[in-house]
Amino acid sequence: MSTKKISIGTKPTAKPAPAAADAWVESRVPAEGPEPMKRLTIDVPESLHRTIKAQCAMRGTKIADEVRELLLQKYGQA
Image 1 (cartoon, helix red, strand yellow):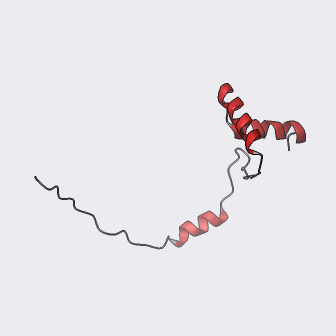
Image 2 (image 1 turned 60 degrees about the horizontal axis):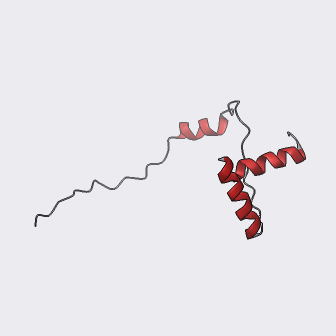
Image 3 (image 1 turned 90 degrees about the horizontal axis):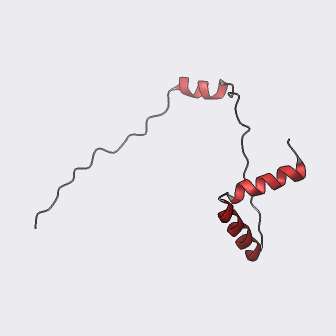
């Protein structure tokens, strides 16, 4: 039986970021684009989750997209 030899490279060093990079990040203006998203976590009964998941699977949609659409219908566009 032959053994395979593997060489592992050197360990990366933790170089600090250049000061210019920090200054750029702090002073940059965000580009126009889609509105940033925020995460919303809710608890629902298992039976409701199972129903939503099955319906979304049959339609080929994601639960998050369905819930987002319902929230937009209820609360409108911000």
